[in-house]
Image 1 (cartoon, rainbow, N blue to C red):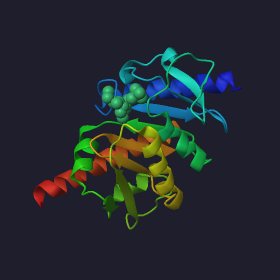
Image 2 (image 1 turned 90 degrees about the vertical axis):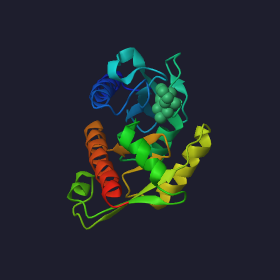
Image 3 (image 1 turned 45 degrees about the vertical axis):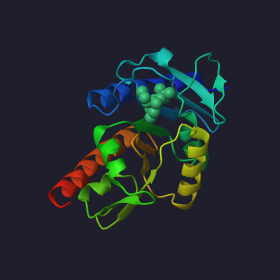
Image 4 (image 1 turned 60 degrees about the vertical axis):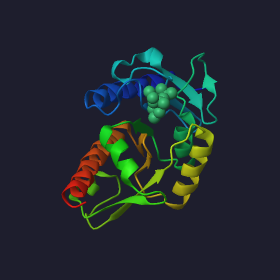
Amino acid sequence: MFDVTRYAKAADSIIEAGRFLYQRGWSPATSSNYSARLDEQHIAITVSGRHKGDLGSGDVMVVDLAGNPVQSSSRSSAETRLHTVLYELFPEVGAVVHTHSVKATVLSRLVSAGHSLILEGYELQKAFSGVDTHESTLTIPVFNNSQDIDALAEKTKQWFASHPGQPGYLIRGHGLYTWGETMKDCLRHVEAFEFLFECELEAMRVRP
Ligand SMILES: CSC[C@@H](O)[C@@H](O)C(=O)COP(=O)(O)O
Ligand SMILES: [Zn+2]
């Protein structure tokens, strides 16, 4: 069983995140999903198919880390397993956010198959938790999109098990996943990624 007060707080953080991310244009047309940890075994996560700019408490439900609904007859995000593998891997992760911005989508299609997006030399890399210098190298893997979410989740789990310090990943033609200790950390990470994606796209335009 989960703590109801914790659920209420987590749901509020998810609803607020949806408003912010939709307004910024990063979660259009019912895309995206968000979650927050309640305890070792449970997370609050968005119900599948809901409009993220207009979430209410009925649009956030509880699942266990196996993805089973707890006290809910709703269907959780189709991408629930992409969230739960991150909670399984990293006990310190308290929230996970998935977005569908134009820049993440376009850039993910420009990174060649088998390559990662490398971010180096940007002061804004320090917006990511644990990064304290522009002289760091962030390796952002780009996974091929798939409707087989269990298979995709397994690939992400394997990659991040051996690269635990990296702050997120792209799915080609689809969007961004990032996480943090709190929902605030996640939103800062999304903003930082969006800034860095714009820089990378602009650099490609100026010097193709
Ligand atoms: C509206 S298309 C986007 C979906 O296919 C999916 O990628 C997505 O991000 C939202 O799925 P959801 O099941 O609502 O969590
Ligand atoms: Zn998606």
